[in-house]
Length: 209
Image 1 (cartoon, rainbow, N blue to C red):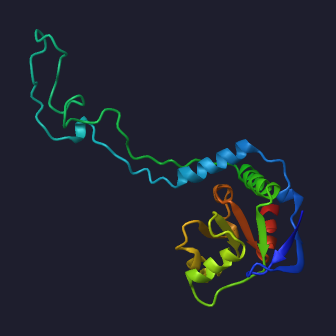
Image 2: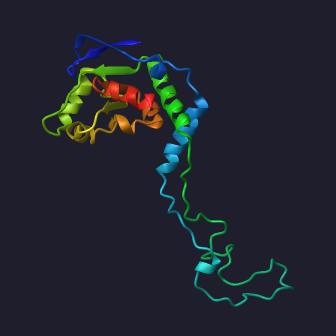
Image 3: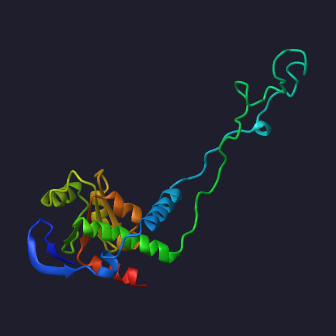
């Protein structure tokens, strides 16, 4: 698949790049995508939720009423979970939500996500660029050049492009990631995927491993 390389002002150049079919033209595997996206979202969870059980509460252990003859259910101490101010029954406890996936499956998921973007023609390639200083207006102008300011975009760059990252940080629908941090969830969450020209070689090398 061939794509024209654009300047950051939106103009087309005479250069073209070829997206490898082994990465951008595979048959998408939806289950692999599901597992990889699920893992990403699970790893975002802190897992620090906690509630108190009976043993964690302070309170009298005096039996509140006699066992029989009241016509109601038996009741123990005041820390019972069915009483107001009592313990939480089967409440959440701190836990780790992380789980492992095979490298081959994660690679397949990311190739599948990239292939979906290529099929929908939502991939854009721009010349390698950087900003002299972090400035949100510069990145907003960049998006406006391609009429993408109102859409979710993901720009994939090489390392040491901090000025670009900082310029996009305050824009709600814009995200900038290094090629090494490219993941299935971010690819599919964006309406349009933008690659800096010098990043494609790094992406291809990463998936060739």
